[in-house]
Length: 340
Image (cartoon, rainbow, N blue to C red):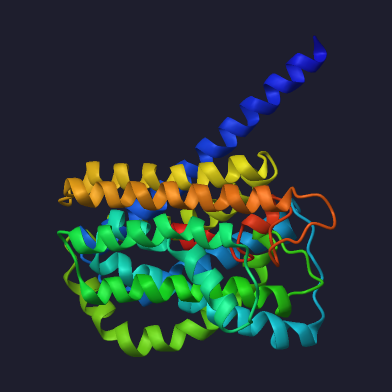
């Protein structure tokens, strides 16, 4: 009886963890798109900088003030030799995500972001000369095919937004690959990752944001008809962005690797559906089919990697095949990536 109750509580906990993860993710994406489209605050660098500041403060409060998570100690030299380069790539990744969201619909942006597994495998093969099992390559076919179909049939296509999203995938892949070598020996979770990288990212982005968007932001402040409510939404999106990282930490510890993979792809479908209900961007039938094929391909890719990870010792396996749910997640969360 007690075992059944524990099992039921474990299932309920997993469901609650996934639902709150979806909730924060969809909320942040919708808020960001609302900022760019409805509030007419068309400054992605400034939005990204606000997110970094809020995330840095939130991580400090969680670790130093509330002590909900122990701080992972990092050697001072490693902060510049390892953390700073990762923060630079992390910053580029977030900015490109916000730039793409500024120009293209959420549905299209989220579909393109699903291209990340393919760019990760291709980069590791081309640059690092890593071998991958044929099943991995086969699982990428529906992802690539779905992206192509979605791009060709996108009714709100914008080349600048498309390129930003695509290069964002490359940045995410680069970040994940570099993390294997630069952060070797450190077992970061999402909160400690933000704690160390968000301050560096703020420092990197603050000057470009001020130089490129400073005058525009001042003009927007002077002409915005509902300044207070708009600022609440803008800074609220930063707070939600940090909450998204905390929710990812919770869902990782409440689900299995397979559940995490499937829930991650369903999360994209939920975000696409909710954004369409709010913004009503036109989506053709073929575009929806392309998005569906991409998500199915991502799920199949995760499943293949999981199966390869379960092979008995001594069986040839794909290098860096994830052996647990932590390795299915990029070192620096989508998250922040998903969120923006």
